[in-house]
Length: 94
Image (cartoon, rainbow, N blue to C red; front, side):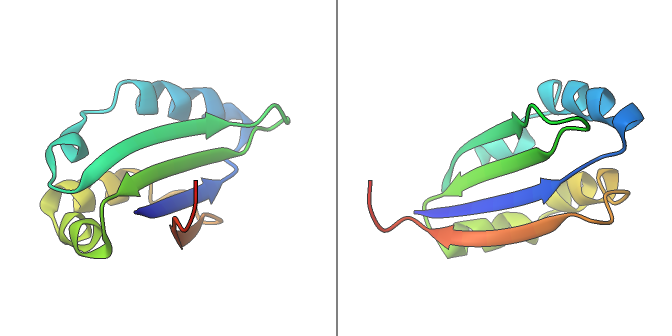
């Protein structure tokens, strides 16, 4: 299993708006083969840090989504997060 994590700290005035947007997401990614789930995490810090965590069956499934128009639209909507980081992890134990 592959876990992809995007981490960012929005401006204080943007944090609540982004959380609301994530809660109302279109769920387009949910139908992609190999997609296993998504969580949006918010820290208790002020301003909060947000983590977008997606889980995939394998890298090929994740790459197919990253090449899709759905991903391009989602990416454009979050382009203002200049300090965002992105990392991939392989699950090696549970």
